Length: 285
Ligand code: NDP
Image 1 (cartoon, protein in one colour):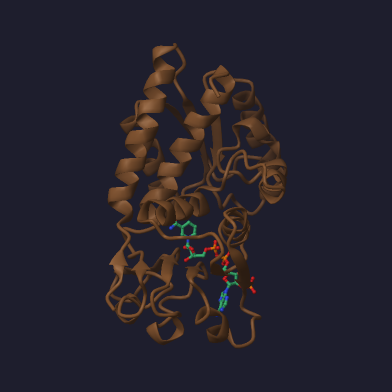
Image 2: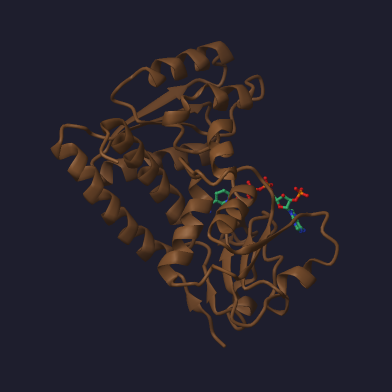
């Protein structure tokens, strides 16, 4: 079997067009959705992510503010900037690019964002809402992964979904979203004994470990849908996922490539969350 490739770039383009229509409808009513992205320090990877987020907003005609703070910014100063954006009616989404410098308590920072503007979905209130099945803001990477499954036509209800990884930003929310979609969910971690036993039973396999090519074709159930969240830089400078694409695509039914799979969806869902937040504020939902 050769897997159907789930093309994240094409699907992201399609999803962005859907959200652009909703943004345009809001703008026609005098509300321009606005996103503020705060970056503290000079981390080169973070700078690229932030630039891409600002660019995606521009593509959809959203208002965006890019707040750049120096690496020695105090926690109090960052919290006061967040308070200012919380009160700003032009801003419907606030995102603090992680990681923040070590002298700043990232949990305190995430908790300071107004839960109604928490487009990353990391505030405990939004985490709780997701856990209780009343999702308000879904964390963007798992939200994007769910969209890929939906757009590719992968059946979820009643299927066995195995998520490898339990981070707060990917693994845990992904498992909750799959559960919400009526999958039977197993979460595996670095402590799981006999990982292949679980992966070989997965109808849907989501891999988010940060371990390059750790899932090989022989660990995959024939016909399974494989979502590879990992982004790893190889010695030759190229990117690869947590799944060994070449062997996996011979066994899987569907598979996401890296790059060009989950990656383009993450920013797309951030923009979607911002538009949705503006819709809620405008009372159009
Ligand atoms: P974390 O490092 O926070 O979490 C990794 C998880 O994988 C942990 O729960 C860990 O288990 C588990 N794990 C590690 N090794 C193994 C193993 N050998 N077997 C089973 N489980 C294992 O990573 P993130 O969740 O933040 O990110 C995961 C990957 O996704 C990274 O490559 C990251 O770059 C990528 N990513 C991609 C995004 C995108 O837009 N495409 C966005 C965010 C992340 P334990 O808890 O026991 O340590």
